[in-house]
Length: 304
Image (cartoon, rainbow, N blue to C red):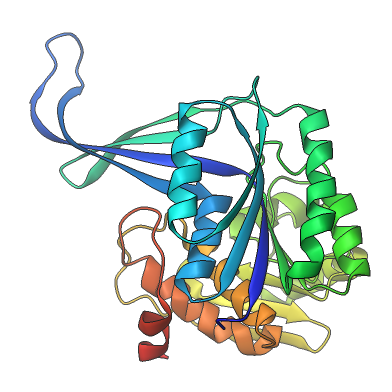
């Protein structure tokens, strides 16, 4: 695992948490007054995915586009401190995505999102950077949060495919044709429904996913199913693993952990089928933690 190198490409964000005490209701409106006592900042989006890769003991590089603002410099410092190699393209007109969560009494009371879309010429320059980084990595992971940072993903997938690299995609939106020729995509139930529609039963689901897999020329589709575990659909059929969570505290970032674990293992030479039960275990551990969290190699393999 220590020699495995994963190139993470996608939309990053700064996750801010403001914790406070809630002692009264505002006299101005029927809302709680939160007296902030503590602030915390964490890697979010693709930055959290890359952080999950390094926490597992593998190496990660992060290619992304951010603004030239306070949030982007905070995020870059956070990411660099974890040992991730940062490759940040900057767009002065871009507002770096920030998700601010206000927490009172161990509950999320409010979330504020700050964001806009990057310029196309900045994104085009990232394709050249991607081509330079590609030979140095064993697997490529695209983390799509629908923020506009992966406008050139089709071209990047073609280059990675030509270089013989495994390609993992955490998808977003209703148009999956842009992920054509990837090795595996990892939608959750709601994301898959957006693309293939509702399914009547397992047979209907199987038929729809296999049709999608063949249409997009994917090696596999890994469907994450929350309390139902996850199912890998590939040319051999399917492989289902049951959920491992002992206690579900917070599902934030669980999909990040699953795909990061898959990418780290695949980069280390593990097959998709062998990686799935371990990634499922990692997802089960991370939902027992608060906020965007990670799982260490020792935690994962102590329970494996």
